Amino acid sequence: MRRIATIRGRVKMSVRTIIRHVRIWGAMVAVSFSRIMHYRLDTVARFIGILPVLIMRVIVLTLPYQFVSTIAGWDAHEVLMVLGMFYVSEGLSWVFYKRGISLLEERLQTGMMSSVLLKPVNSRFFISFSELDVTRIADVVAGAGLLTVAVVSSGINVGLMEIVFAAVGLFEGLAIMYGLYLLVNSLSFWTNRTYLGHVANPVFTLARYPVDFWGGSVKNLFYFVVPLAFVSTVPAGLLAGKLPLWWLGVGVVMAFLGVVASSVVWRYGVRYYLDNGVRYE
Image 1 (spheres, rainbow, N blue to C red):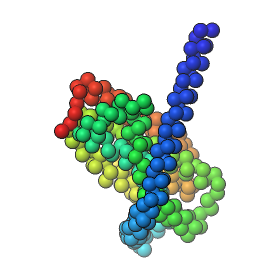
Image 2: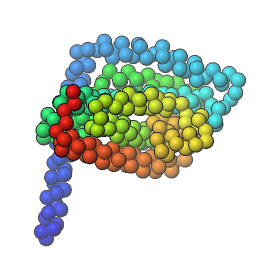
Image 3: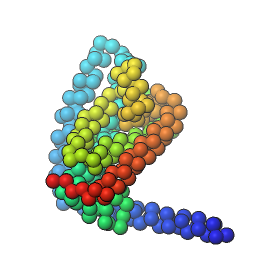
Image 4: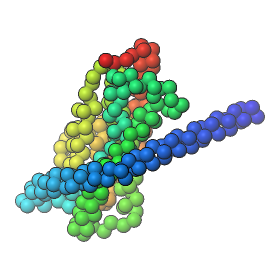
């Protein structure tokens, strides 16, 4: 009976902790959206700024299809679906967690990390989600628009189930990207300046192309080792009906491993920071 009571107590405490963190996150979202209401032109400027770049990328990607019908099994419409999915995924990642994680190195250098660790909230949660870049909603809107145009012009019969499968794949890709991005930036605990976060961003942009384009071992690398495929290729493939549903199972495993690995590195990094009393100059 005591064991059951202990388990119930732990479950109640865990539920309360989750609810508290959800409320904190909701307050952060409210603050971020109130900020965008005061600076609406920033989002409009962001949207206007990315349109020419998006149009140029569409032209460059579709140019080879004037001479061939498919490349590595992907036709022009499907490639545009991948590009649109990339913009949606990249935009959502910056809206929710990339900005906060990218500021970790600065917090370590200025000593602000100490104040974060003193807050009555999980430090990894606070670092990841305290800074929302809501102007990147423009990327999401642009990507969704390109996705819609690509699907309609392709003539592919996309039903509700395909949309649900693609949404699940997109969520898995966001979780995988979160784990990878946090893991890379957490290396800042051991060095003064890593710049690895800045290096990781160009690597992630490779996901704007179907990973099958790379072929051979590089393709397998992007599917199973550094799974950039789940950022755009897999969700777009599921939407187009090109990929089997077991890829969703692979995505769950990859997301779990990525989040767990980043959590382990984070805990060791925080322990190193506290044990050494580190304050970077």
